[in-house]
Image (cartoon, rainbow, N blue to C red; front, side):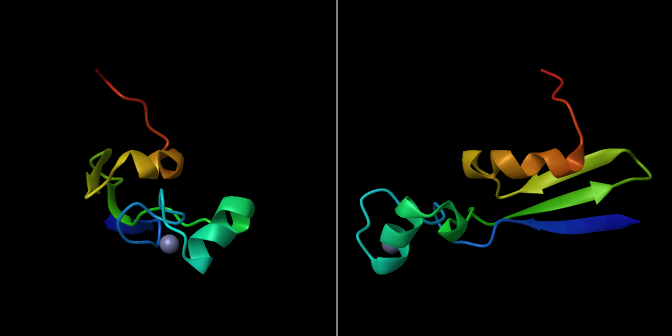
Length: 73
Ligand SMILES: [Zn+2]
């Protein structure tokens, strides 16, 4: 079985975005609870012991722990 997990829930660079002065970004600079991570898709194939990231960026790094993995470089 393959599980799909949405990582993040914001477009582009997430919230807040650098240099943006909209109300949402301003609130997020001052309150961590208002921050949103950029959206990406994680696919986990537990039977094969494999996981895949789709459209992931460095902004998703904090979400990777759900896969319980280590990098083989
Ligand atoms: Zn903004």
